[in-house]
Length: 405
Image (cartoon, rainbow, N blue to C red; front, side, top):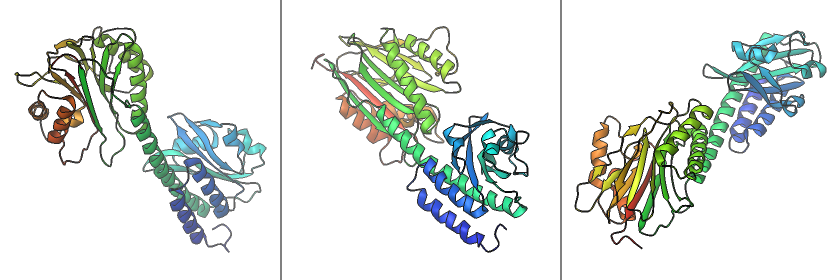
């Protein structure tokens, strides 16, 4: 192995100890910078760099030691091109004993005077997520033991990146998701509103959200949605859909037309993203509410003196699958005391149970009454002491018995 007087196993143990400590303290860039310093020491190299795969077509320099210009200049290497691109494309180590324009696509490397290089893929399972490479300014070649050692280091670097990135992504997604929920519910004369939001326990942040707001016209809008997927990506799409939906409500369009326009936006700008949405609007004096559904379960309606039922609203395709020429909507009468509850499927779905059972359970738990009491009773009866394995969003609308505050 490199420099026989060194105990490489002790150095690997030192690297592992640094990794374990850094995971709880450093962001990804600082973590990589610390690891690359140790990589250079272990391999007796003059330079080290990590490039991570961005999308499916390019490697991007994320950290470097001895060749910091790679990061500062935003070096991007096409997959399959040159030294690093070939490593990422094949998932195999590459040793270079000549560094020039014929072997390396990044001129910084030969301009820096690097004479020999060794690179290995960063692997998470069978998936290549990037490249770790080292270089020397003299002609000492890298040998087979160096390849084995660098691959061990690369595996630890990859797992460190994955672990720390997951922590950061969860924190960012949770913060973003919470920031998209309304801080307070609007006050509308003649209406009561209540809401609940419960994230799944122990899982990556999901894409459920609710929004309740008034337009300049005085109309009250209620939106409950669920983006397919989890994590930061789902939370970002959720935020974009929420913003687009709010913008389109300013056009004073019915909810079915708002959903049609949002669907066009999702299909064009959020490719391969899908979401179910219940969108509703009520206009003063709030004696009706118009509802449109994009792949979302229907609201439940409880009217005094009548059985609680699911609203009779046609369910159109989810957002992201391609907008039909027309979307449908339906109006629900709000007699004094009527309650309408909107929710995401985490409230009613249970594994190994038909969805109709969940609908029946929801109807049985919903009765006409004060909005906050209704929301409390629904959560008590449908969640109880269970550990939620999916996010739950719930919005309850009630028209006051007297029709005013």
